[in-house]
Image 1 (cartoon, rainbow, N blue to C red):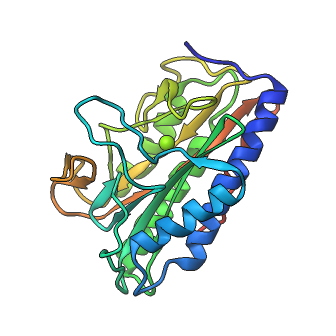
Image 2: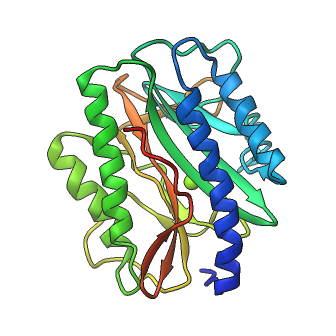
Length: 259
Ligand code: MG
């Protein structure tokens, strides 16, 4: 069931969204050659708890066959697409790209956001992947209008990145968000304009294109969590929590661009 949020509920989500976005702004400053993904995770958890929040990913367990997720952030490097496990032995190197995904509950409401950052100087190809993926998110958000459809959002991503030669992850999608991190509906990053469910004012959704420079196939790594590209190509992931309002979309996780 789709939960339509009242204005006072969206006001609560604005607070959760702000704390979540602030974590990414901290990441933007902290990401550099030599830092570990475990240290980034520690900084993220510290900020959320200092703001009376609860890390949404920590101990998250979507299925009984899965181990609880151990981190506050997902830290996915280079060919890792999403759900990378932060680790004090994983040292970032000059030229890497790292996708940081973070979620936080504040006063019982959830924010969810992700951004891919360059580690020091990166190749022009990696820089372009980051720019295209961030641009695809902004194009999708522009379609998050009452009366538009989920297909309009998916098409905004797919119709932009595929002609440029990039691949769209099909197995993972964005989602409704509110009192729970994952609510209905699913928000695919592909689709046909005008098709699918119609968006209504008061819906709150997490839009999160996951784009790769190579083939679209992904696999889950040996730890049971980390999703990687099958062909070893690079991947980027940008996400914002968005409220669909009468007068247009409002971004609830307003992190600063990596640019
Ligand atoms: Mg999400």
